[in-house]
Amino acid sequence: MVEVEWQRMKAQELRRLAEQNAVVILPIASIEQHGPHLPTMTDTRLGHEVAIRAARKAYPRRPVVVTPVVWSGLSEHHMPFGGTLTISPETFRGLLHDLILALTRQGFRDILISNSHGGNIIALQQICDALSASTPATLVLTTYPIEAAAEVGALLEDQEGMQHACEAETSMMMACEGDLVDDSNLGALASNAGDGHAFLKAGRASYRWRPFTHVTGNGLAGNPARASATKGEALCEVSAEALAALITDPDTWAAPSDLRGDGTGGVAFRPES
Ligand SMILES: [Zn+2]
Image (cartoon, rainbow, N blue to C red; front, side, top):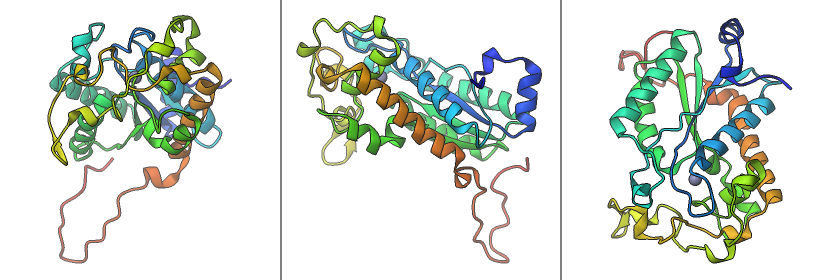
């Protein structure tokens, strides 16, 4: 099986991958409470699994390397349950800036930021916007249960999509780390907490911060009673397929169109690579 993990390779192998214009997957996750039945590494473990599988699926069409998972994410809303290691948005932004700079200094130009935690999404969009004006790299941001939303939804029985410590995440952890899933009382854990983000809404379309305790007493959103390892394996596969399709689509990495006519603008999008 082809090696795709950055930390398992030698420096010269990574220099060769940069020369081959390999895609770098930079997985970003969290360490946070996932109810009484799943370990706190759930987003980190699943982000790693989906990234590695996606890299192997894409490799025959384009070389891919996966960095270690950045486990430190934005999880303030989970802090009241304990078990959560959150960092500040300023630290998160600085960390992403430095890691992307380390990659571009070595010549990598196509970087897929592969997120596996909902609380990181808005900050990561802002970071992509800010860095894209100053980096020679193309930054693409994806969150696997959203990129693969149709396929993930089709496999679930009680939920329309990924929630939290739910039918989907419990299934995937049964497939990847079965010994760490406490399945002794899954029937009692279902929590009708909406789509996982409804608790942050006010009025018709306004935003208001609330901790996750605002909508769930046990840290879940969704129904883990419907989970199975077989379903989890299928969820890992469709998620990885969606990311592999994203990586191997030339349009993903194409330069921005420039529809300005003569005498219009004149300001560069970003520095020359
Ligand atoms: Zn999760």
